[in-house]
Image (cartoon, rainbow, N blue to C red; front, top):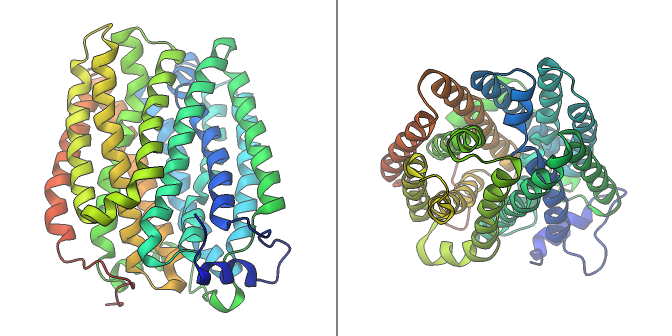
Length: 418
């Protein structure tokens, strides 16, 4: 996708060390850097629960491990977003990538659960930069193209979920350290490519003045930007439901289906294929045909159905599990970029970074709450309980979406401040 004329001016107008090379789209560059970042993230997914178990963790402590990572994203996503509104996207992205490299190395060398926990805290700080990446896309796209632009980030997630878990599973046969060191290597390559090729997207004249960086300034947008609370509440519900699956699936599959790291990695890779196809190629056409609001409701309904059916997977029946995970993957792939697009449409240009950072914070907060609940339910109930709870949450979100999204008018300009 080539950037809009306004976006091209924004990307090349900054007086900085990096400018887009002739014929090279800034969107293509950000897509490539986000993809490498998420491949590294995806490598960890099938390993993390079993890695923690090998260090003596219960399911509840596995949930804490997931939650601590996301808590750092909750804290740092709006910070990165607001700082990028003030000084530009590029320096913030490069700084956060550096933190990620160091965190992956520490993660690979962990000798205890607490060491592992500390490494995940650092990783959460580094990978809280997705709000800046989505703000970058908003900088270089027109409002009517935004869903497709956000779909590129979704496609990067899809590719990360395809190659990352597959690499994690295959390299995991040699122990937990090799795949994690590979993730560190990818993060280092990502840093080098971004430093060499990623241009600035936000020129000085479009940079806002930071009013504050704490919780008060961050959440003040909820009272100032019309309809933003409605959208971010659905972001929270959608992410919490998926994160319950993400935390519990590997443990469930090992106990009930006899899966090892390789098998779980392949299932997550399949989820990534569905995400890449829908978010990378189909989301723009689907939004034009049905609109973001309808896609959000449809996606939540599919996720509710898929989560409910996971515990009924018969042992050894791969095709049944694949069909169930197709529902979950399709639902998530429809919902995520549609909600991100709606968030970006509610905010004015100089506050899009903060608004998208706020949405990412709600997503991160959901990834704190979801895994904690899933881990406790796994220990206190059974391996099935987290999936039934996640299905109930997604069904509630599906019902609520009708009322929450009804007043939002999707036009070519952001809604006015209340």
